[in-house]
Image (cartoon, rainbow, N blue to C red):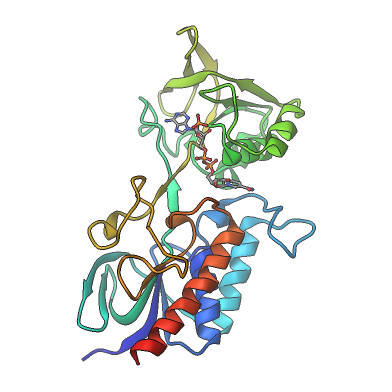
Length: 307
Ligand code: NAP
């Protein structure tokens, strides 16, 4: 019989890495599984201004890299692999991944979210050729060029402001005339001379032969269509939970987020969920980190009970 770990954490964003810090510091035998590289969505955020302890702000990458270093210093083992299957045995779970098989008494799901797609002509074809979901990664390619940012939430406004460091003009396209984003972001964007708003407008198509050349905008009040020349299009129209693999195993909300109780236990005893992937009113680095701590603590209490 293969070894049975105390905890397997799935996903290495702020929630997963913090769970790793708390679990390893409490001497629980813990493995963290990550599909690509540790850091999650936060590592792709240009600048984090609201994480306590950093009065001058910190880059998302730096913040997440520090969390990874702190977790591994406590002995956290990070393995690369995508979870394909979870089987519940009598008193443990068997996790099958693309690279390994792991047995564990408890699981912490911290798989996070991914950017929602717009599903308009040209989006898929020109992805990576002007269409992007990461201003931090791709923003500097658009020095002195015009770009468009789609969305009216915190991400669109925050990343739109960031893009003004490089672009000559940032067009923010939003489907309503009211913003979902915090007032502070809206005010900052409105005061930025490089930002132009196109409200009550949707993107009908993204156009270009080999790279993005323009977008077709449709005004939803007048129905009028217009062509806006831009070299880049940054999509920030919301987040979709990474829960496909858990459908039928864990109880999910209508939007696909994992339902949990106050101890972050899911519908399956021994399985906890932390961070953006769970049903929660606020998705921030600090709430994800806090969730990671609670989930590791709850997993510890669960282990005490079954042992
Ligand atoms: P979000 O809050 O869900 O906003 C998505 C935006 O995209 C909304 O304005 C929405 O329009 C628009 N949208 C959705 N589907 C669309 C479609 N098919 N076509 C056109 N527009 C569409 O997503 P988010 O901005 O990525 O934020 C996600 C979470 O991260 C939030 O909890 C946010 O507070 C957090 N966040 C925080 C910070 C920060 O505090 N520094 C920074 C980034 C993100 P409607 O408004 O009309 O629905």
